[in-house]
Image (cartoon, rainbow, N blue to C red):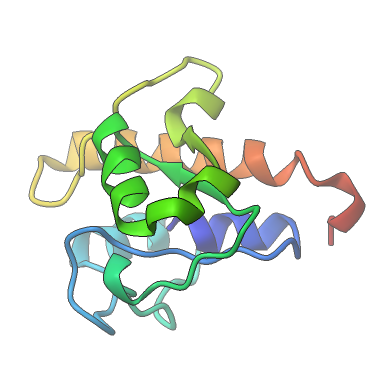
Length: 133
């Protein structure tokens, strides 16, 4: 969701991956419901696993939980020293240092979490004004 929202605002390169997903899965039913409520088109998106993702030196990696950052760094190995890391919730007006995975949670939590993802993705996209669409 963050990738789709981010790329609606800027053409700055962005890609996403999941830590616990299968390859080429469509968005979850909950994500589809939330996206419809926000008029966001997500049906063309397919999942990419962390293990299949290609990192590049200089990447900015955005996680949802501190443990996510640790896991990604371990997967990246020495390349992690040439990248930057942040938490999505730290880009919200009300800072959130830990955004738990909303899948299989009540709709109210899912909506609150995805609204925070939307807010943080928009805030990050606004950091790249030279490339705004």
